[in-house]
Image 1 (cartoon, each protein chain N blue to C red):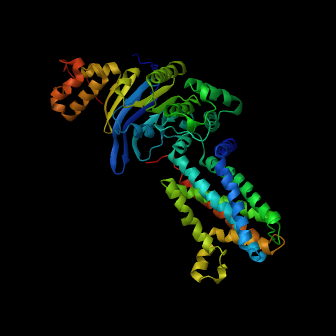
Image 2 (tube, rainbow over the protein chains, first blue to last red):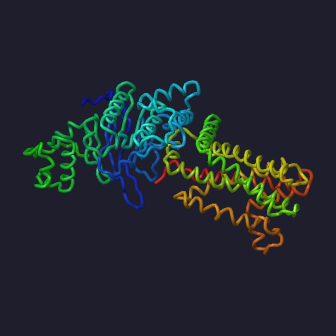
Image 3 (tube, chains in turn blue, purple):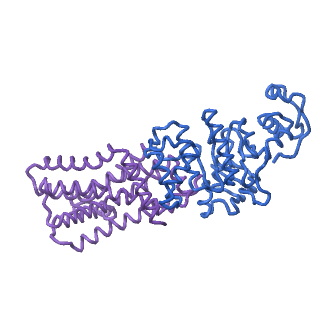
Length: 280
Length: 245
């Protein structure tokens, strides 16, 4: 997939030596990466690897962050960024005892959208997530997937330049998942929005322009899906991920096949090819 | 800080309440029923009903507002909406004042209902104006709102939040002079009661009970209640953190 970022634009996120300490442990350990402006970047890794902590560090909700993280040209967490980025947590953060429209109306007011434009902004966001029919339903009465779309709609309200989405497609049916990914690409293509989207489902990788592969608080690799597959000689991102993990565990014997791993990679059997240098 | 965001927050809190009519009914009716019960408990002792009733008018709103605010704020913290709001251009003061406005309005309604019932139906007689009593009730309710907001930071669950009510409010209730005059208590207890805000709510109510006009003591007591409410609200603001671990 082509990287849509305009060459002249500064990266939306630039991190150097980004470290987060929690309970005395380094849950994020010295990450260096960029998220190109206007790209759909996937943050992939197993559950518990630090994706959420990393996202919280980027949006400025995480305490005890060291190293540097620059967001839209500003230090992460700067007050002026609050107008320019949208963050959607994994659990839908909306009021269950309000209707969908009342939720969006309140958050639109908080974002400073003037009253005459508020109704149109709310309707637009509801259309984006395909929830127009549920506008007057009580949020607590919706299904889990619908509620996460309400949460996503809130983030779309202020037309943010950067959207940070924590597992937005988890638990959704395949049709809805495809629709959301189409929406994400539309946002990037039509509005120039940068999206950073986390997932623990590796098969969503190919929907991204660019990937950050994470494991145990460290970055295994970053690059486009094609680059990562090529560099590891794998047919799938899952295969690339496994190979990178093996390589990180035994740097001197990188590339040698473990028999029990081979089954996972039947698609690229025989290709234990040379290493690229996309490993972070 | 922006008035538009403060008002939007107050409207949102009231809209949430509107979707929960049972809570609103309980808030408004329980004090009315309790005061009626008190009236029958002190069947033929009008003077005692006047004394305890006028103090309770100030205490009811504090109890309910403490509970409602601590649970509402705890929900805001645990549901992720607080984190979301603090990642948006919302000043902490907008949030706090929004809550104070919404629950303050509810407190006016609740205190108005129960004071009206006491004065016009149950024949509670005070030397001063019932409006002065209402003012005590509203300020004490705001104190309850501020305290509820503050303690919600130390509660990890709704179970804990509910338990903070007896922990924070009952000692004040015992020491505020409702059960026995404060100057007849052990000196150590009297000293403690001097630094607890509810003592001043009850003092102010007693001033209205005994004096026809606005007394200097009444104003001083109300000032103390309002000052403590404001101070606790500022402490509550300090517990709202944009960055958490």
